[in-house]
Amino acid sequence: MTRKYVDCRSTPSVAGCTLTMSGEEEELVRAAATHMVDVHGHTDDDTLREGIRHDLADEPVADTEPGAFVQLIEFRTSRIDEVERLTDEWADAIGADRTARWGVLAADRDRAEQYVEIVEFPNAEQARVNSENPETGRFADRLRALCEGEPRFVNLEVRGTTSFAPAAAAAPRQRTATTS
Image (cartoon, rainbow, N blue to C red; front, side, top):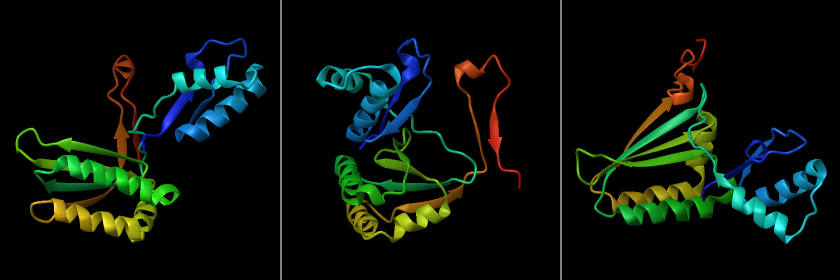
């Protein structure tokens, strides 16, 4: 399930609010409605909540910082639609116990039916907690059954990140890195 976010800066207001919130849709709508009543003076009603839902956007995925743990899973399958459904089922089954923060599934443009999934965790300990969850074990077993050969897992500690965003082009490139 994609996390959503809402940003007060995208809607001009007298309060000049700069708050940004993110979460699963229903909890975010509740929190944003409370904020809109308390800070912006709105009335909590269906119209307000419909407006909040309209303004929700998918949370950006790449907010990784040094010390985070990233796992690459390389695999080959002719059943990618089933893999995508399996990933959604895992996310629903693990629920609030999920420690993965985001994931990207990409198809190799040079090798047919070859894929890489990139999954980010806050740190190696949270990745271990995720791996030890029985739902993750079931997911891994079912993934293997959908693959041609064994998936390859690469475990990485993030040393640094760099923004290549166009807005950053005029300014010096920003790099976040570990000091070790």
